[in-house]
Structure formats: structure tokens, C-alpha cells
Image 1 (cartoon, rainbow, N blue to C red):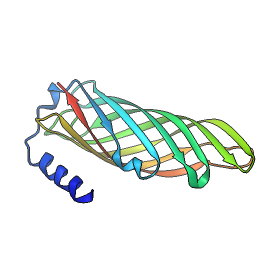
Image 2 (cartoon, rainbow, N blue to C red):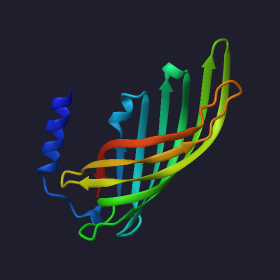
Image 3 (cartoon, rainbow, N blue to C red):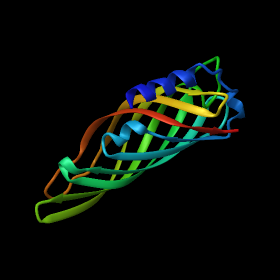
Image 4 (cartoon, rainbow, N blue to C red):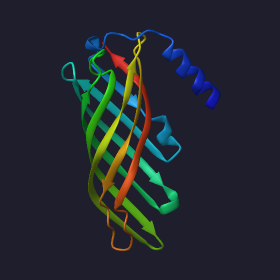
Length: 167
């Protein structure tokens, strides 16, 4: 599996990049999230040469802490590269998250709606084939306090999203 992913990444990087201004949108998934019980899909829309807006939806189930839920996210990306235009190159973004969490501990189940946010940065490549690779990292905070369990606090944002760019 790891060898196959590495070969896919090398093949994608060996192809020249398309003109980012020709991209109308990108649909992406984060395969790293699967290892942590998270399914995440994102749609990114370029707004101009240096900015884009992305919306995402996720489902998560963290059985070890008995927390599951659904989330929506939004981010406004600022692209900094002088050699490329959005949605390609080095970027930074504020992120807003809306989540519905459920906690099942013992004989009790609780639910809470939480708002969170953070910042992230990274680099996104878009190839002639339409394949897009988005590497990012950052830090976020969520406030999710149940009656019997406090799930509030900071968390790292780390991801690798793979997707397809529409022209």
C-alpha cells in the first residue's frame, strides 16, 4: 500500500503542471484521515489569481474515545507563490469548522454542537492530467464539552488530499 502510494506520487510529480487559471474547481479527499476514522471530502473554487474558497464535509468515528459525528468546514486560501496562480502553490488559510459530536460512555449518550477554527498552510500541485495533490499542516481549536466528557482543546491539522481539478 505504501509502495503503491509512493509510486502514484512520483508519477504525478513527473508530469508538468497545468495553468492554474484554467482550473474551475477541485474535488479532493484526504486518504490519511481514513487511518484515524475520518472521511473528508473538499471542494475548492478559485476566486482570482491569489485566492480561493474551499468547503468540506466530514464524518468521523473515534471508537477509542467513544466520539463520532459530522462536520462542515470552510476556508479562505491566500496563495503566495509568484510563479503560480490559485489554486496552485504555497498557501495559508483561516479555517472554520461546525461539528455535531456524539459521545457514548457507559449507559449514557450525549450530543453537542461545536464551533471551531484554526489556521493552516501548505502547498498544492495541479497536473495536466487534472490530478491535484494538496499537502498541509496547521493548528486548530474546538469547543465540545459534554456533561460527562470534555472534548475541547487544540489539535494539529495535518493532511494530504488527492483530487481532480476541473477545467
